[in-house]
Length: 132
View 1 (cartoon, rainbow, N blue to C red):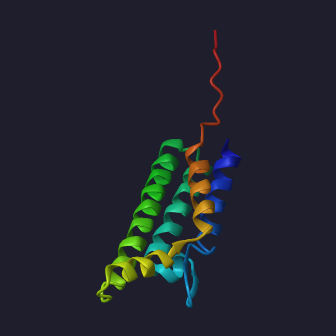
View 2 (tube, rainbow, N blue to C red):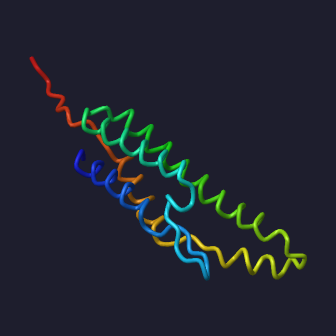
């Protein structure tokens, strides 16, 4: 299971470079284009999870995985609320909602969430045998 968790760390790291948000006429944004501070936090947490998996500290790797999962959910919520605030200058609510709906999450989130769930699957590699 250690290899699976390490693969999860790799997926989270690589997934941060994939498109996470699609904005028409502007293009796709990854974590770095969304917020540089958030991307550094994601990379730091991923590195910490990677090191804790290598040191067989499963509890820490799960904590880092949960923090990453919460960060991803908060980021998705922030993207939606920021797009609502960004188009708040439009007086007609129907047109504003259409504009907000144009900002969509992209396929990179799938890679991010799969990576986090693989990190959360980490188990101890220590064999517990009975000694008489």
